[in-house]
Every structure is written in structure tokens, then in C-alpha cells.
Image 1: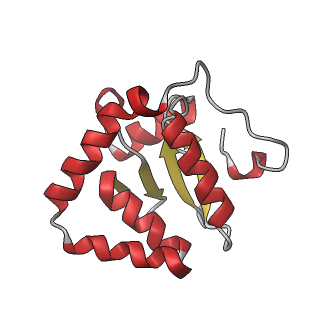
Image 2: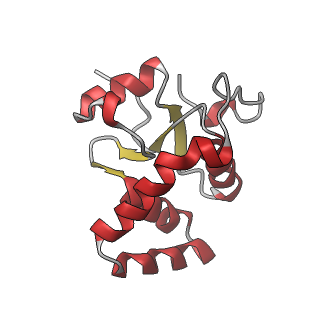
Length: 138
């Protein structure tokens, strides 16, 4: 059984991707309601969560939003759910729901497949500062 905070939404992300790291930093900065916690897909806990929700880790090129005991979202749906939860101006991003999921995910996949080429890749996952450690699960 996974030991996850039940009152937080878990974002699983590619810990060596510069685009993903920037996205995580952006979300942390704008998460005024302290809704999210973060787990690298490469971590042991990230792998356990994927297994728990039934996603093959070998086929994942996406950010995943996991709400323990409720649901999980991936690809463009995860991005839209995160924007919705950030609230304020970011809630406007949910207007993209009018675009069919297949088209949204096609664009998402195109960016995901090229993320290392366009934004680079780190040798290791980000090490959070002491202040940010509370936002990351191990």
C-alpha cells in the first residue's frame, strides 16, 4: 500500500527533463493553495505509483496528475487539470478542453518526443532546496 498524502494531488514528472523541471518550478511558484506534491517518474516511489495505477513505466512520456483514491490524468488532460487547480488566470487554460482530446494529445506527444532535443536533459534529477523539500515525496 502506498503511503501518500490523501489531501494532496501528486504530479509525476520526468526528473531529468529541463522542460519538465521548469514546469514543476512554475507550478510550485503558482500553487498558492498548496495543492500539489511532486514525484519524479524515475524514483522508486514514482515507479510504485505507476504500477499502482496500472501504467507501464516503459511507455510513459507524460506528466501525470494522480489524485489518490480518486483518479489520475495524463498528457493534455493532466495539464488542463493542473491549470484548473491553480485557479485564477490559469483557469483560462481550460478553454483548450474544446479541442478534441486526440488533437490535444497529438500536440502533447509531439512536444514530449522532442523535449530533450529542444530543452535538454540533465544527468540527474533536480535536488530541491530545503524550503522546497516539503513539496517533493520520496
